Length: 480
Image (cartoon, rainbow, N blue to C red; front, side):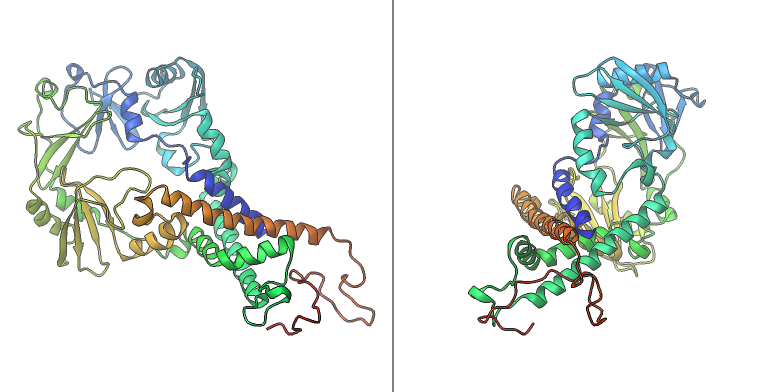
């Protein structure tokens, strides 16, 4: 049974190297949105909200809800509206519109605040499907036919991710813990037996270190060569759901983040003046943030870097690194700042694993009880990531051992691809050979010699580990 699971995990892992689980990236989202019509924007700016063009004009989006310029909540999106939003976003007419609670691609809890969802199939050669939040009218996910096909061979079996199971988060977590835990026991015990059967000094007939032939030899030798990596990989997968919450981290407190931002009353804005600035031209989204008591307007457009203006003066902003370092003391107020580093290339914790990361970046290390590290954007002053010692350890035990996303490998592709293919194939051989051996064992007819009780009533094992070749006069008879 464990070999079946392992074979599925290894083979699906190869697919996942190139086809990730469906998601809507920020660039895809921006590309599908219409430019903000600044002539229709009025009223006060809303903090912690995003301004973008809606179906009938600009809207403010905040935490799964949408509000029109009047400040009133927007009514739930209708099927006709969802079809229109999807058609404009995907540049093709809608062929089907269905209201769903969840499906295979939207089963994750991150979509809960948008449910129910409108699932809109577009009349396109690639079979594009868009999911529209019924609460805000925004596109929250896109999938195409090719992506869906490969995910049935990749992420879905690898994560044991069928909708009926994944929608029950506690149950799914227990399934992952127990299946991977059983696989760890099976792999470790198999390695132990394999080591016991190996002979480096007093070798078997023909100078062989393994007593087996055929599939049994493949299983034995590849297990000896790749067993340690296999066990490390399964253990890292087991750690992916954080058993016993060993790596749980509270992170920076809300109070510390608020002190760092220093937010005040949102400034009164002349929207026509805002819309006339070069930074606002063609922007698909705008948001207001605070950094060290300074309100900043962030304008986003497809294919380009975000533009930043001081919300009070509407002039471009260039934050001083020294000022950011001084302000960062508020994030961990009771601790000494151990180091402040200006990173122009990735480090072991801020790196391109699944996409690009902002560089340069300011990394600040604190000498507090959690050994906290903070990564800050020098352009906006936003905290991009915070990590304590537990999360950094988790990075090595899960990401490092499961994805092998070490800098020396991911910076030298296809070196990473070659390494992943080699050891995933070795793992697949170990697993598939184990399946073949097990099926042959189960398919053997039983007789009195293997039925469990011998002629004299002596109990014999019904099943035993793979039997080696019979000893010959030239072979030692001990099991050392």
